[in-house]
Length: 123
Image (spheres, rainbow, N blue to C red):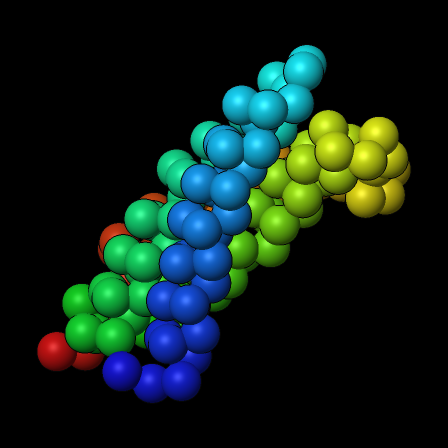
């Protein structure tokens, strides 16, 4: 496993950790629907990022395309969930249009995951 794959693995684990933390925080904050949504997105995407790191490390899919797909998911997740969490906890956005931008980046990441499925990897 290369350093890039280890970084992706750590970022997937961080997404899971933050998802659990945001879920717990949402249980104690009134009107925390957007925090719950952020938590759900973190928890939904964490296993996907972990799986992409594993696919890249084993060469099952094309390493570069898979790593780019995982990285794009991480960026989209940070923008989308980060903005929702900041709004819920501090009442301020990350920057204008951060959540919608993050959502679009997430969709692009999933498209790249699909592309990675069809680009042959080395075994």
